[in-house]
Image (cartoon, rainbow, N blue to C red; front, side, top):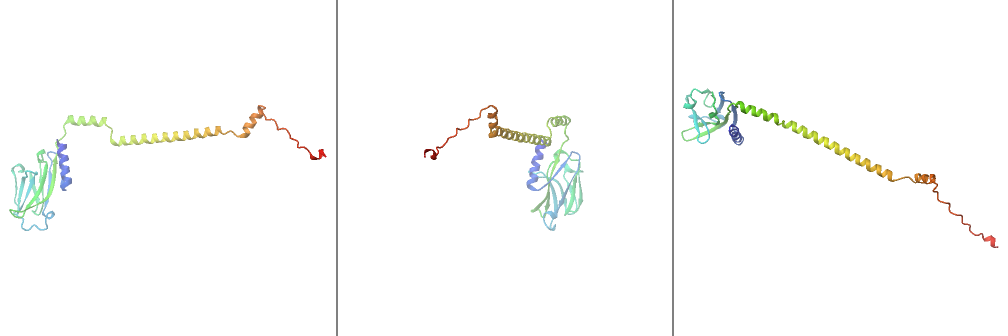
Length: 215
């Protein structure tokens, strides 16, 4: 369940540009609210709200321009402010899983207009139970890391390539030897025939008649 929420918050952070924060239960988180990130001047600002959630938004605190900070009941004794209205930090302590979600600084110029500024996505993860850790350990032992799988695949590919090249060279050598054996020199043939006394008889001499004998 927590992983599903983490993926959702991660997608929201990527699309909106909000800052993603990961915390464990019992830890603290510090959020910075700055009016300079929204508009150039703080003139006319009457206060700032820190909201939690999307729909509906829940108030965490109200920071009045008179430097009075009023946290809501759920965050009472858990929020600490440091700085001025235009640029300050808010630290929420003793986090629980329900504190996960979107936090946004909302400056109020008048009662009718507001300026939404810095946004944070907080994920408070519960500690993993012991059985789940053991199950994860067994899974990791059975499944080799991806890097070892990649190394083994490369080694097998290289070995197969070497065998293929050697087979091609062997085939070429065998073909060349067959061609050499098939082309016997004429001298060798004549020598064999001589040893076996298979020498062709010499052609008989043909005497052409002499014209002077008839004279």
